[in-house]
Length: 166
Image 1 (cartoon, rainbow, N blue to C red):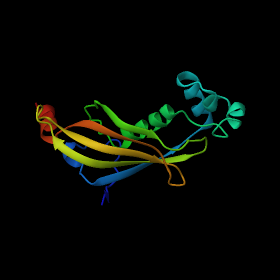
Image 2 (spheres, rainbow, N blue to C red; image 1 turned 60 degrees about the vertical axis):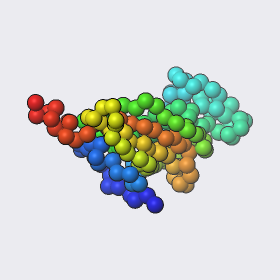
Image 3 (cartoon, rainbow, N blue to C red; image 1 turned 90 degrees about the horizontal axis):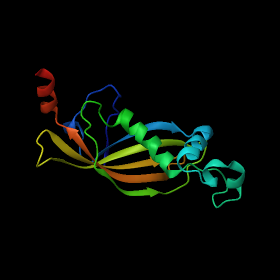
Image 4 (cartoon, rainbow, N blue to C red; image 1 turned 90 degrees about the vertical axis):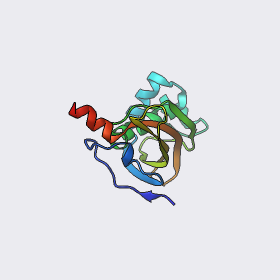
């Protein structure tokens, strides 16, 4: 069973050692705004269901929905502010199993849940560890709207301290 972890603040320093297996944090809320939804879609995913409220009413979703990429961008923004540490995050080689599970609509309120599935030290680079996380966003009805699994590289505390003291 997963245990809820304490929420972090965006200016707090945390390191590989602070990402504990079998814990999760919930962050947010993210408010989905109609104008932002349309603006994003016009630029990156200009399908009628994302940009034209009238056309979207007669489409398969019976109304305007966010691009899945917009939903991912909103989730990523929340992760950067409240899950990845500005002093230890070393990036990611990618994500797995991205699923858009339910449409996201204007007015939705999303919560992001990040569950730490596994952590391990890097065998080739001793200054870092690997953090495997399941990321999910839930709407105001607690329905999952998107999920994906991500691997992140995180700096270890002692290497950060050595670097800053030298």
